[in-house]
Length: 379
Image 1 (cartoon, rainbow, N blue to C red):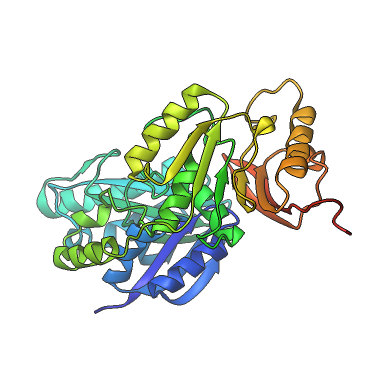
Image 2 (spheres, one colour):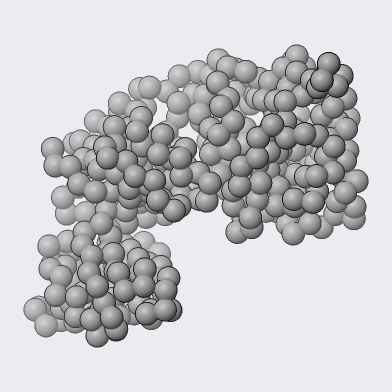
């Protein structure tokens, strides 16, 4: 089976976690990049990556690269590539361009010149041209521009992998699914300790944790762009799919998911049902500040509101109450809190054991770990 280069993209701060996931899949010559991981793998690895990776956004397959000093170089190089080997003029395609540097400064213009080069090649050879379909193309092409270096890849994923499909309803500013999974993996949770999600919102933390504990591939209920490629191996894909599905197990731990509003409980229940994990998650209407855990220990995850994301009359008081609640009610627990309000994190009144820089909703965020003890830590 042929081995070729693949690149999985991710969010800031999750590169090492993604690299570990790829290693477990069997990826070779793994190299951590900025918000991406490069590796070598076969078609089987490509299919597994799309089905199983929890912290990836897309899986790209680089096909060629070149140097372009101006728009004419870009057009010529694109026009000369044998696109007819990948599609015909009856197929649809779309361009996703990312640019950095001063040579090319507008992604839409790069996408336009790429489109012109492909369309003109087909028109010159066949007299007809393929059409653009930005929503559901047969072939999605990724153009990455770094100064004068142009990398052209095929997007094997289609709809981004973080869009699992289960979250048909959500509260305001829900946490990204891939980010939630990444935070859980970063925590070192062993899939056995009780899992607490006491400001659940849309239930994303609980659902992603249930996916992890049950070994459910996050892409098990969706389709992918590579299924439309001319060399798609349907028999191999079916074998990979069945193999991963047969590895699903019942979780060994308990999941406690709660929120203060009845509306949130309905959203959580609906999303958990869509994800197929509703039987594992105990959903409860409860104010975190009045809560009492039903276990002596466990892992607790919070994505509390913060100033840039949601309006709070007194963000300082809110975070102080989080810290007080953890100290008074959650001794023996390990708490992980992510926030983009670094000042608010300081008023928790807790000493962080770990600090990890991430990105949440387009904002710089920090994930902090707190190990809760009875009395003073020195004691």
